[in-house]
Amino acid sequence: LYIHFPREFPNGKPLELIQQARAAGDPKGDVALARYYLLTGQFENHTDEIEGLCAPIAEAQPECFQLLARVYLVDGRSEDLKALVDRAKQAWEQGSIEDRDLYLFARWLSDDETPQKQVAATNELYQMLTPDYVPALTARAKLIMENNYLAEPEVVIEMLREARANGDLKASLSLARAYERGRIVPTDPKKAIEYAMEAREKYPSAEYLLGRIYKRGYLGEPDPEKAKQHLLTAARRGFPKADYALAELYWEAKGIEVNRVYAWSFALLAVEGGVERAKELMVDMVLSLPEHTEKRAEALYRQERAARRQMIAGGTSGPATTTKQGG
Image (cartoon, rainbow, N blue to C red):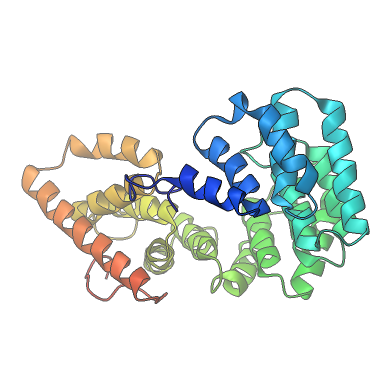
């Protein structure tokens, strides 16, 4: 907590707690120290120490596979990285690490935060896990969609359908995206909606996808009312791209009445959620936004934000009820 939220705990002393754990003989203290170096920007200055901490305990503390891989990538030690991947395979085959441990290591190897993506290694590890470990089916399909030289599109769709048949709603979401975007299969908005409807309860991004389909009129004509419903649900479930889409919807007003108050307040929420495009939209908006409108929008933004926080604190997943925004 202290490492991840330093502003919340300005007087926290995570290093002291880590040293206490290590002194007590807890191997998780060694992992925590390596993580401390990573999260405080000291990783590259401590690669030798991190290797010494993690190499002896990787099977017992599988997070160490990721940390060791980062060490080898940072230091350009390709042979050591290959040996580490082989070690992870052997550990999994012998039952020393679980399916999920190998899956998380495989996913990290080609993740955006990896110093240098190892797509081939990720693909190989996913293949070992499939078809028995269903999340690896969906993850491999996604990997192939992003790196289409790995397999033909038909293979991707078949894997996703198999994962979906095994109850993986992430596969339904991936199928919805595939049919909405039309990159590896012909665009089919009806199929995209069908699959997104399956995934919407678990994944707010499925609600966003539904909103985008209706907003852009992929079924023939835009349906701004349906778009608004789905986008607002996604936004209130923590998907900030939906706030941006709502700001755009109310600003462009294609099929609905222009509402500058809503547009500005949703843009503020999108910026707070880290959507950079929202800043550009606000630059366009501010030129024609009267000061009194801006003040009303900021008040509504604060009201909506407070309602969402209250909703999260209460553990509910439905729309906030203490705000009229978007209604």
